[in-house]
Length: 433
Image (cartoon, rainbow, N blue to C red):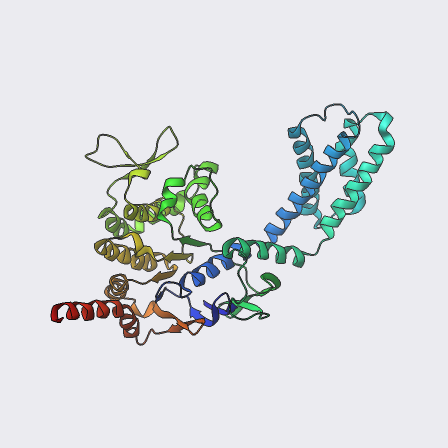
């Protein structure tokens, strides 16, 4: 899989191979996180596009009906229509009926929509308002047909625009030069997904492949503290929280097979995890998460765990729930930030083992020489050093330059070693001043 980027934010031009483990190293503010967010956005906005379009049509039909019923009721008395929940229920019934006909036939005719409306609404209105009732049916018919006739392309472009806007806060096109179209291409086995942006809006979308795998983005271990919080989260944190929490609530048996397979074949990973996270994750009656550990008379609340430990707990939960599947994309944005150097080494081995057993596409950004060295050494130890690709991100004038340095990763160490050299020079001055 290869990701091509052009004129996106501060990145002028980049081509990145995402196969096995992809390591992007560099200083702060050099576009490392942008690459991961692009990959995350591509997978999670394009996946199930047809289904999302139909969901959007259905939601718009339901909302159109709900508002029309409220407006109709505001002009006079009707019996039964007095509660907001009733508006929603009736509107949902109309939308569901229309969806069922579409699923059977592939399309729905205006006269069929009118019949659905008439059958659903007729008994709700008094006979002495027949003319108003007829006008309501005709208005609803017109609105629903407009929604159904809206081209899929227009809806998909709007969905893509909104998704990327939520991730990049509207700063998609080049921040350096105006009037340049941004271009993204994801190539998988000679098939492409292509997105083009102008004025921070997606104006072209082409796809010759259906994405069946998901992308998981981890950059904030504090999400552990907010699993049951109703506070607003950004799109990335919300996606991770949904994985860790809501699927458990919606279906208690979600991921059972995957979880069993994971536990059977990933003993080595769990043994490595146990070096750091020695215990069992439990949910108590208060719906809060705890770590149950031998030697403690009561479980430890997630909020009382160290920040570094929370990073490991997230991986443990994803694995134990069977939420990481083969060929998924795992994006780890500077995971070493909250980790002691010793735990950086353990985390690096976990990444290598995850790729080894799950065949994940893992993208890791880092600015730690310890972490980089650990990834390099453990990939060699576990026999697939050739499946790790290294990139160096750096500023080239005002633009970000991302260079493949797999054949000369020493250039990364040289860049990371410059602060140490500065300190050595300062030490020399102080000792010889």
